[in-house]
Amino acid sequence: MPSSCFAQAAVVSDPQNHVFVCVNTGFVAFAIEGTYNVLAVVDQTHLPTMIKDRITGVTLGSTHEVTMRSRTGSGDKDYVVALLYVLKMFLSPFFPNK
Image (cartoon, rainbow, N blue to C red):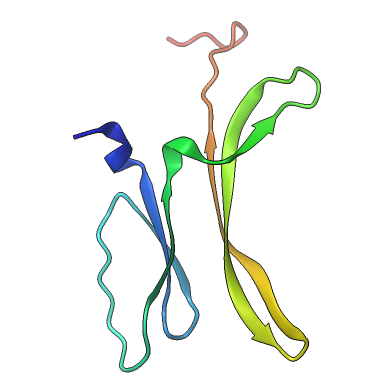
């Protein structure tokens, strides 16, 4: 199986608007009424927004924001409900691995 199969996350909203992030696992839920909405299925190996060090320009990792639309008195607005991130591991000469 490709390694990307094990690096996926599902962002799910339940009928009470609770948000769950399921990473590399199953999901079991029960609701009396309402529906569960899958807001996003994200491949964590290819997150779109890069995090770079301002001084060195080195890429430190990447992020992805998952949003959910909400209706308010002033209209519809998107809110960030999950922030997924992956940080790169660096080997430093100052802290050698043993």
